[in-house]
Length: 385
Image 1: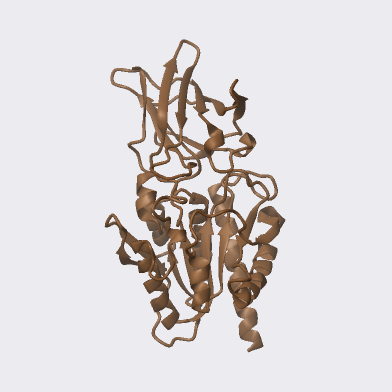
Image 2 (image 1 turned 60 degrees about the horizontal axis):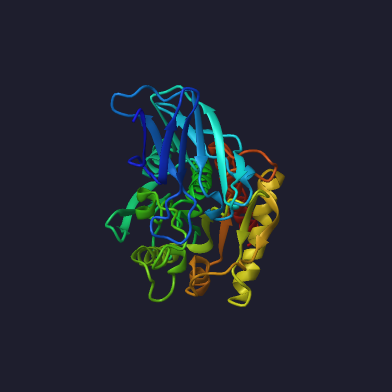
């Protein structure tokens, strides 16, 4: 074999891989691996020179098999993976070309020119422990890093904080969370921008505690992680919790509440691939808690204005009406039970509200705008007290 494909790389995920070579074109076909879950979306693989083989050819065709099995993948134009050559940086790919097969299945393909020893392809910009460490380093160690517990597979769960605070502290508090679904990397990039903005302001108020990689096992293994059996993290927030990671997070939130005046909790996610209208927020259902719904509505209106037309969907504040595989509560319901206002914010994988492609810088800009909106509201609240 002249070329080979491997998922033995950070966050690797692909299955049903085949490579066909001829004089004009090398074709690599693959599909996302469900990794034991009912939904697929995340993929990440490397095409490289095999033993004794030649360089990766200039003319490379990638074929994403059975794209219709991916969550919300009905519109091929919304699928813009990222690509990097050996030693290079990730860049966005153009929209792929859909092909409907005779039996109605849909594949999506891209033709690329990539002269290199290897090329990596992923659904979206990966974000893992290296990026968390870079965030801490590049913000001048503004954030402390603490291991607050272990995952079900014994990996450390890391929380960042601008200060540990003290009991009965009355400063405003934020609790921030990303990657309850491990493949939803846009959530981590937006949180990254949020935290960088707070650090740039050198703010010790609000007290900020943040967990960038909640499902660390799924992140490391390259899982998509939504609705994985027996429970994904965001379906495990009952009492008692159904995942050990959630137990760790619940107890961390309890410590946070003792050290601040809880103002807002945000859970950063990414939606299905069909989304192209911008970022939006899921609010607690009003029937679960009218007070929590009202508070969240106020925050949603404020944050939507701050995101502006570049990032905010026209319908920013939403109620989740899609069918769930479980009836156990999620993060927002748990927070409401403690009297903490909470939102889940969804950021698309590729396309922003203004139609432009989302890059890492644009994700971070969106996060910075959210942080700015929160800080403005806190300043207004202080002035009115």
